[in-house]
Length: 256
Image 1: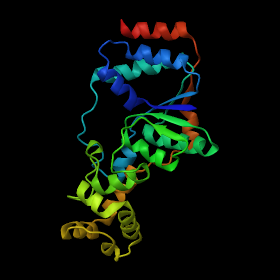
Image 2 (image 1 turned 90 degrees about the horizontal axis):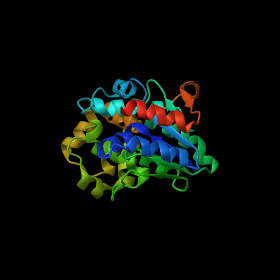
Image 3 (image 1 turned 45 degrees about the vertical axis):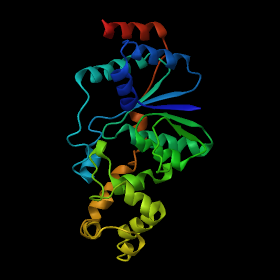
């Protein structure tokens, strides 16, 4: 099994919920004890920029982690340098994109990939490789993993500030179903004006989609994973050198 951690997502939860102060140490010890390969992927600097170039409102106004969380990220990165963990942090890309690249590299070879993240976007990879990929993100009862991208394109994602189709919500998702919505989506992207016959929508929704096909396509593009150049991933990959004493010393230095 290959363990891949979405570190900004995973460690933020650890740091925000850990009242003992032992979260980073527990994670370090888990890495040392883990028999499987461990890859820790971080959001790169300006990781949201490419998606904002597609849709300017992406994550705009979302509350950023406080200083303590960022300090915890920095500490964890330094400590992991003295473990067997492979760390990847590619400028200009979010961790999601790198994790998608890694999953698509290893899952087709029969490798089991366990993704440690509470980010619902990761369920798209479970949909691609249901036999080889598992993820800790909480599923939605009425959305199968293979339909996550379609769902978020139509309904939106408040956490990432993606509005979706105005006033399209859960009830219309259930009434139309993913097959009909995917058929309409494909036609919209292809410029086929017959798409309204495939779905049941309110007239104002039809008008919005007819007037804003490019924005609708932008939602689809940013919900999906961006292609990351392999050479950039290689360039920004750090392989740790296991040394428990040094890891412990680094942790103690930060915790003082």
